[in-house]
Length: 316
Image (tube, rainbow, N blue to C red):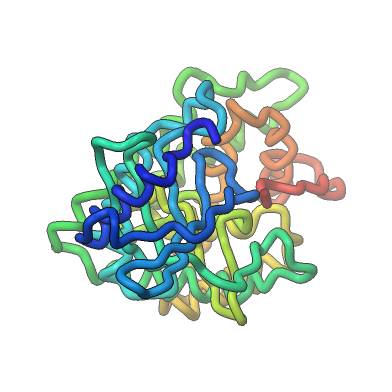
């Protein structure tokens, strides 16, 4: 298929991954990944020196070449995150097998161990988001122990300027019909600095669409947007679209995993700032987030206490 390496190139590339000549790599079966969203991906079954392996291969070619998110640099970065960070953290993330950085069609390649019998959260009747929240808290707690290590400097570190950036250029122009919006943006400007400090390694887009479950085990995928930042940003993305009671339970589960007090004012402030940051950061692409911002304003008493507008969020 266009963009995918042919069998000979695939065998050569996987030979580089496993430090074997191409003739020791036998391609048994290939199947494009039907859940691919940005980059070309496929599941490959191979015989490697007589041993059967099922691999997940992600290539530096976008499904839509015009999509600015389909930048091969994201794959190169994700390779480093898997190799230098996730492998060290040692939690339930896909196993890194290796990479091919150049000299082949569709390079770079990210090669992972295929996760068998895994189900996307978005395809489960009742996604176990509470387990996902607890997993996330544990991941942030464990990953924070990497501070000071050389690999800790690999991801981009978000600072107060990054958190305030969505306000630059007046993304939303408050109008006479939306006096609450000016108040909300002012409130966010006040609390955004709370996101600085106690940073952890975050996934960056911890939406259910990027989470698999395998026999009750939470397995997040697609780590190309990892950052060192406030962990509450990941929690905010996971909680999008859920009713308040469920969000409270997820926040409590997250804090149990991370070892925080979910009732502490500092956590509540950071979580609020993270929710507003996520909405504002996506606003250019999703203008209908004005409803989500209005709901946040109602929770803060900045607008009339009418019924909250149902928001589906990015549970994609």
